[in-house]
Amino acid sequence: MSVDPQELRSVAARLGAGVSVVTVGWRGSVHAATVSTLQVLSQEPPLLGVTLHVDSRIAEAIEDTSTWSVSVLADDQGPLAEWLASPGRPVVGQLDRVPSGPARESSGRWLAGAAAWFDCRTVQRHLVGDHVLVVGDVLVAVEGDPTAGALIHLRGRTRGVR
Image 1 (cartoon, helix red, strand yellow):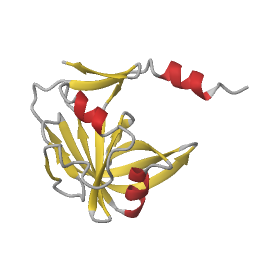
Image 2 (cartoon, one colour):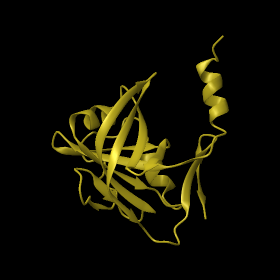
Image 3 (spheres, one colour):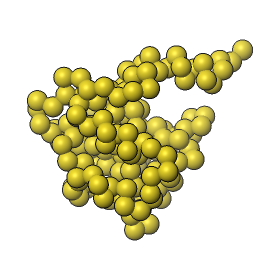
């Protein structure tokens, strides 16, 4: 007997999760998406995992591009997370109103003020139900302001934690 998907979503909303933004340069634009499923999978070798909806633009972009970036959002970046998670935002120029700079080793961008940044190269992809787990070899890992807090997604809202 399976759990109803809406019931699972409601119950899973009780799992607090860190909020990050994945970016990738693709087809002449930088694409971005807010995620709350980022995890360090291994320290040796250094591997990061992120799950993306299989039908999302960002999943398609990462499938076509070998490198991508992650900005781990700080406690004061809730509005940024909401903008990059909003349906209907423009495909082109979605980072125009977001302060950012070029990533060090990927086609993505690093968002200004983030708590940390990663650049990764895809080494594995696994279809997992309606999502794809993308495993990236960590090329660069940089800590931001050491006093920055974290942005957490809990019960359908983002909350800053210090």
